[in-house]
Length: 187
Image (cartoon, rainbow, N blue to C red; front, top):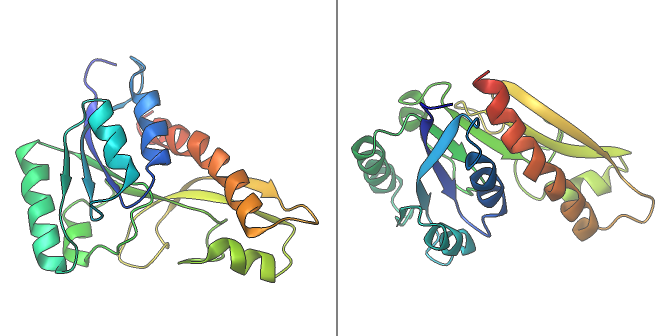
C-alpha cells in the first residue's frame, strides 16, 4: 500500500499498544503510517519507544483541556494527520475535538463493551464472577467507551484469575486486535 494514512497515536503510559501498531505499520501493506505520538504524561514509557524508533512525539500537559486540545490540533494539522489511535490514553477528549475527526478516532478498551466501560475494568469483571472478558476496539464518540465496535476478542477467566493475570492475558490480545482492527477499517 503506497499511500498510507498519516496517523497520530495518543498515549499516557507504557505504550505497548503503540509499539504493537508501530511494528505492524512497518509492513508495506499495512494501511497507516505513524507520523506523530502525543502524550499527556511526560514520563510515559511509550515516549521512549517513539524516540527509539524515530517517531516525532510531543508532550502537552492536559491540566487545561482547551490548551491541550488546541496544541494537539495544531501539531496534527501541521503534519496533515488524518487518523488517530488512542492507545492507553487516559484522558477524555471534548466533543469539539472528537467532531473534528468524526469516525477517524479509534480506541482500545480492556473489556467486552458495552460491559465495563471506564476504569478499573479487570477488578470489576472479577467481582462479577463473569466467565469471560476481553478487549474491544471501537470508534470514539462523545460518550465514554460507547462508539461503534470495530472488533472484539474474548478471553476466558480462569478460576484462580487475579487482576494482574487477567490484565496480562487481555493485553496480549490487545496487541493483536488493535492492528487487525486498523486493517479492517481500511479494507
